[in-house]
Length: 208
Figure: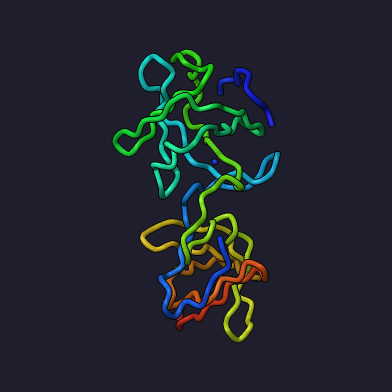
């Protein structure tokens, strides 16, 4: 992990029975579709993506990648993903504005110092992530889980979690077929992170 220095210019908890629980969801507190998968130094979660400089004093317009934008007001440091490296950045100031976080980093207090950072992800270590509410799961924890029916039939493996109105599990079957399974309690009956599997109850046509 790379610390300080000027960078070269240039992303739960085990499921409970769901009968009287809200539908499970792949939470995006501190995660993006390119999330939590490590490059070096362990697992990190994306908490924002740099959009553009703001003003002349080094502030950056950051799009929060979290269900809790106010989380940015609590952070004291983040890591910026730059290729296969992470650069440690200390936060000097944060102010929320129109759904964005305007962030200034210590030692990068001019527009020139932050030029070329557009599009980069800002991350925190997984250990610093906020606890998830019941029924929510980190997207990174769902990727790679096996999908099985209540009768034990193997359906496939989760390749990605697509965030739409209802989150969708993109599943690849053993024959290479791609399926989309809604993450709603009518279909998803149990998520077992320890056994690395998701138990579903398919309806006719869901697996075709």
